[in-house]
Length: 233
Image 1 (cartoon, rainbow, N blue to C red):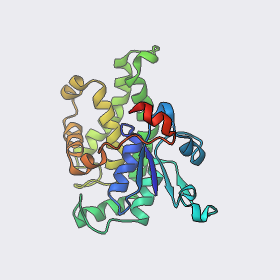
Image 2: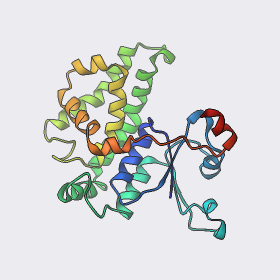
Image 3: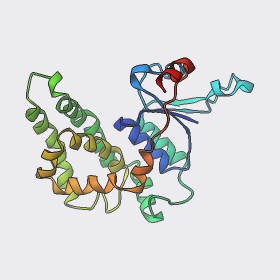
Image 4: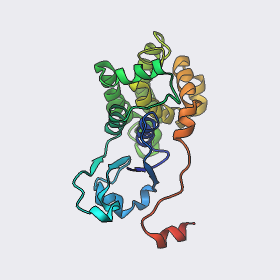
């Protein structure tokens, strides 16, 4: 399998989290978004990461008509595919009981609804907050205030358990925290003083975890243009 990824993209982080929590170990191709590899674009014309290619036919010259090739272009699809089809055979990052909580949460309607809220409402305000200089209709503080409605929702949920739906991390936690990490990094000093102590603690636990350290491993840049690859070194 092949995973096209970009290290700092929260969607790609989400996909890599799912893959690390599964028994899959795809070939990771780290790309740069300003120079997307032609081979990736042939496989996934939409040109965004992550992209997981299962049984890539271009990589198998013996059987170039391999009809079993499957392309997953959405981070949530990759996360679900990895954990449902290839659950971990050993428990490196979560104990057996907590891992089962994660697996059971994949089809939880409340978790899915919260993730959808993250991906639609929160992400929209987050982008405007992060790039407020490009969205001059309102101030950075205005966009942050709008985004904080979702952060406040997370804070209220974390008042009930250590993680969003249980005392161990579930689907929603792994799917959402990369975006909250991005939110926190826009203005770190403000975030550290913000009225969301439970969100800060929750986020810190995920960022400092062995899982996230593994997910954020740096891979060498992959380019299908060897000449350009040589120039960039």
